[in-house]
Image 1 (tube, rainbow, N blue to C red):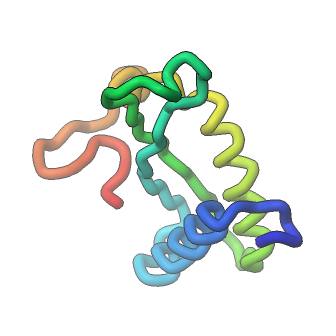
Image 2: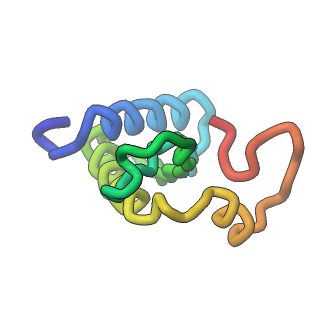
Image 3: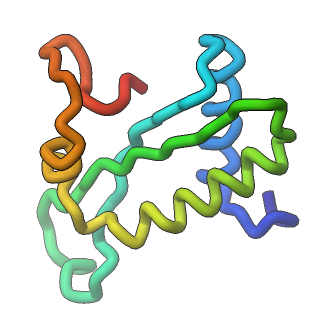
Length: 109
């Protein structure tokens, strides 16, 4: 991951999404993960619940190498970090997915 300029989180996310694609046979993989959402100096020292959920989507169609999956994950993670201030609930409202009380509306893992 160092050669690609990716973090350990990005490498683990890429590995997990690759595993899910192989295990399920699905090529469009979405994984949700919490983020601290303390990217502003003003909230770093505050006590409180600032956590938000980000969704990481990967297209694993074809036969991408792990390096390609890692690069895709890195790009999408960096883009997701830019929008971490948008509450997950607002994303769900905008996407309007089919809702069920038995699972999360956009991702199940």
